[in-house]
Structure formats: C-alpha cells, structure tokens
Length: 203
Image 1 (cartoon, rainbow, N blue to C red):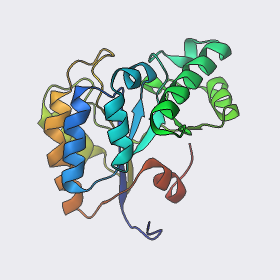
Image 2: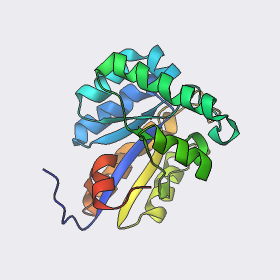
Image 3: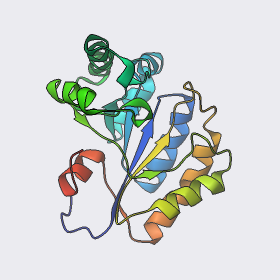
C-alpha cells in the first residue's frame, strides 16, 4: 500500500513504445522491483501486443501517447479524438481495460487540446525531469541529466520507442541500471503516475 508520507518519490515513465527495447527495460525494472508507467503509441502497441501484455501483467501502468505520434497542437478536434480513441481501443483489446492517462508527444499541449483531452475523460501528464535520452548517445550523459534535474518529487521522462526521430534506445537501456541504483541509494521511493498524481498534483 502506498505511504502518503513518503519524503521523496519518483515516477519513471517511458514514451513512444513498445519496441524491442521495451523487453530489456522490463527486465531491468523486474530485477529491481520498480514500477513504471508506459505511454504507448497505438500503432506500436498493435505491432507488439506481447509487450503490452507483459507491461500490464508485471504491474506497470499503461498510458495513451496517441496512435501515430503527431504534434497534437496541429490537429483538428476530430483528428485528436481519433488519435486518442484508436489507441484506447487497441489497448483495451489487449488488456481488457482502457487507459485514462494521456501524454502529448513532444509535450506539445495547449489550453485547447487540454480541454479536449479532459472532455474525453483523460488526465494529461507531463514531467518535471527530462532525461534527454532522445538526444543523447551516452548513458552517462542521460544519467547526469536525471541526477541534476532531480527534485524531491520527480516525474522522469525516458523513451523505450525508436520510431519517432530519436533513434535506437540502447543508451536508455544502458543508463537505467545506474539511474535506479542512484535513486534507491538516495532513498527515493518508486511509484506509478496515478500514485504520483494522488501524492503531488494533477496536470
């Protein structure tokens, strides 16, 4: 049961997947018994249903990251609704439940899109620590971005998908052990985004 008096807590989140890299990330999370939240792209979930099942069965949370990873601020309301609805339907087909968390690709969200997302019954989720794994090729650099960005209550964005401009995720996988070890050593408690929102805030 979640301790509402946690002094320091962190949510690890992964965007753009699933992909073959998700398999390795799940292995690492399992090794350390760390829960995470995966914001999946609907078209990728369709390609890798076994990984979606595994994310869910191992106790992680699934969120919606659109069907095709567009900048949602450029979409019409109907286009945005379709991106979200298609992904929710795909996830529900695979695990029996539909997500209520949504993360906009690139973090590109404005008041209009936020209102549409809310009308659809979804909670928008951003982050306050950017690992910058989307632009870094060094695991050490990713680790340093996380460490220098840490706050008392941190929501960290990383990426397990490799189809949307940021290349292979080898460096993300390679950095994850060290990041988790550092956070554990410094007494951070790992929680999912729904738990984080209960403890901290809703975006």
